[in-house]
Image (cartoon, rainbow, N blue to C red; front, top):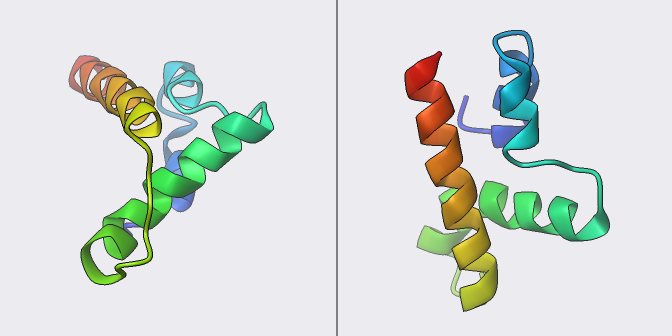
Length: 73
């Protein structure tokens, strides 16, 4: 699957650190995760997809953390 929400659920049992990469504890964090989920398809095929530079910067930091944790696991 390419659905990050499903992948997030599937990886919870591997390492709790993964849960903290993209937390869903605030409306802002949920919004950012939704942008990331939608980016996989929408950013390529839907001209209506929008993301601000600051949102992108935050998500880039999260992806970097995810890579570090993924390599460790």
